[in-house]
Length: 621
Image (cartoon, rainbow, N blue to C red; front, side, top):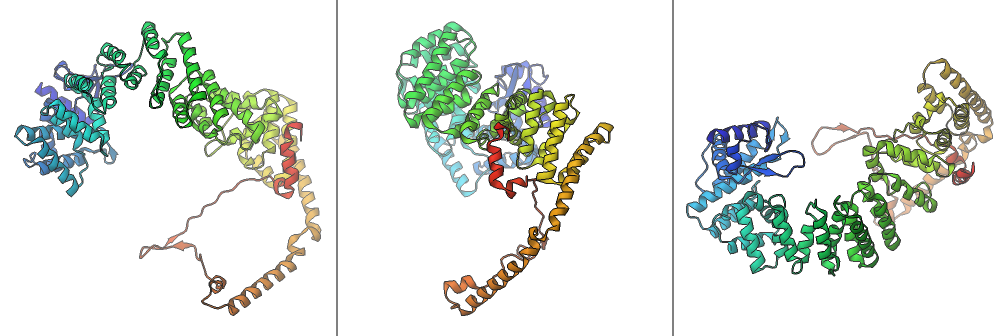
């Protein structure tokens, strides 16, 4: 086995992996039988992971560490603790800058092995803890000793002492270490885990749920029958723990689910058990082996909880429904409406749809919202869900967007959804939509008041449509925008985005008629001085600024310099120049930051009329 250990360690540090499939030559029978490699849960492969607390592994690892650090493991405990930190710094990165996540687990196990060595030499458990804590206070270490300490003393301390240390750690700021120890114990030392479970169950402790739930949960992949039987036994005395386990057992037998349902069904749960109960309901609903009658009953139970429980518990239950109830879109959507009817807490929408398989329910809610809040705010809470659907259900979401263009009523909402993409619009292919949808999309995009330059690439491909009605509509709407909203800028933008083909030249010629009319109108307007603010308002503006400066100068001269008004009236330069300097460092030029957007000039030339046309868009305005 010595040769196998050498190969394993060399492979581990060369490939920076701690897990191996059963087909890997590194995963030998000797390493598996000796507990150096332990099987871990994987749905498709038989995978083994290094047991970081294996004495066989750490004995060989300590020799490797000595070669890396360049010295023997010190015989002084504080120096040995520092030795582990030094080893971690040596192996923590690979390829120069990438952090290796497995390095900390490896070193944690090595520290446990070293601590066990000190215990074998006669160092008292309590004394060891005091020395390590004092060392931490004097010099903070990278590797926390507490998890390693628990694994080290688990081979020396009595069960009662071990429980005491775990409880002390669980009640401290380092509770995650106690959690990790109890969770790993069934896989790394199943006999000790079973002894600890029986001891806690028989003798009792205020932290029964902490111990029993974690031990049973981590025994699921080791001895599922034992876990199931124990959960049934403790349901009456420890319902929270039993519910925790029932909700996490991967049931594959309908009879087992029916049996559990009979145990749980008529029970009354206290407020502190409601959250675990809702998790159990969600997980059994999702289980493929759950009979339809039970599944429907459990949806009724969730509905009853939303309707009846106190407000302080309601959000916790709905959080469970949001993140742990997957699939079953229609029933879950009904629960959302029930929750919103009771709370009006629309902020939950931001994350609610992330586990949905079909975006149609999200779009249904947006349409409902738009009828009361308007199309502008209809997507306010949905941006995250929309982005998620675009990433994973691209075709389905595109279909839902097209459906918004079935009528003018929701067409502006359709554009708003398109524009809610992260940093840029969703690149929907309008050529896939129906003729009616394309017509409404053109009308809505050309009515959208801002960032039209981002929408133009979506509607320009429709110039090649086989339908003359669609082509004429596009030409008409773009012509209106050139004459009334964007002028020559839009014409040049269109020109830059089309080809030199004969069809596109004809298209551009038709658009250019609107540009000619715009330029003629522009010349006529500029020839009328009464319409030119630079000329007819210049004298008034100059007079205003002269009077303003005179008034400020008089006020500043007459003010008492010590008064508050005097301080306000004095001239101070707040910002000057185009560079910045910090301390004695080199002067750096300021960077240029700018954002541009095409804005429909009708929106600010006559905002009331433009707003009215937006609000009446569905009626054809």
